[in-house]
Length: 338
Image (cartoon, rainbow, N blue to C red; front, side):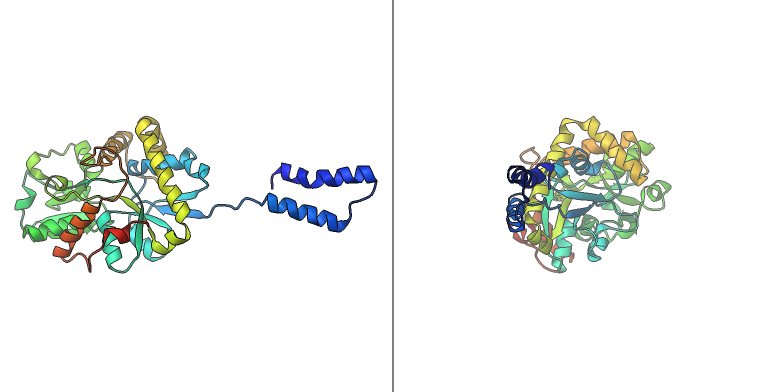
């Protein structure tokens, strides 16, 4: 209890003793203390929510870092712990071990898990567009590289690589890698999946020359499907609905602060980068933050809507089912909190 609550209890006791020169009867004291405790119950400590990001510390998660560092989560009564996976451990693996309460997944990854019987719901969506690129070496058109070696991320299945390989009958030799930029630069692989906010920027920073013909932007060819969102199991949401709703509101506030204060947000990002010992640099993180904020703008409204789009869920269903990447149709309704 607060100090003032104790005064409410003991001030009447002291006053009674002074006036009557006698101690207050025990039954009366007990009743008085019970009444005060009922009127001033002790504060219940918020239950901790452990959030695991989809990758090591970087500007992609700036809004979450800001919401924590600026005290937005705490002010809302939330106890949030932000964790990062290791290079060999993905959020999908840790989810199976029941470790984090909330995880960041791409829309397609979440749909895949739901179709396999994992009842996930989206509580916050920060990506409104696809960042996926397919980049080839020596100015080759990625759609004319039949049977070539294509690297994808180990942390995410990269469904679009499988989809385009099957739909375009390219029969890529798909190789899963933890980190594949060096493999690509060395010539060990012919093409690589990349995101416009990370690997693509790394290639530019390395001095690697890329022509327009060697870059296939999925968002420009009918494959614009949202990526990053925060998911929890439905049972967790049912038990912590109010906290999940607060989390969404406050995280949005965090991202809005980032938009208004990008350089200050960058300093907060770099604090997490250093703590996580992530191999990167300030210039890369600044450019990453700019691109991540661009990807948050809805293609139609040009606004940050922070929502899952029904049409993108339907598009993802169609593509994944056609290519055998879903066990069943995943409806928009089952992905969204009631």
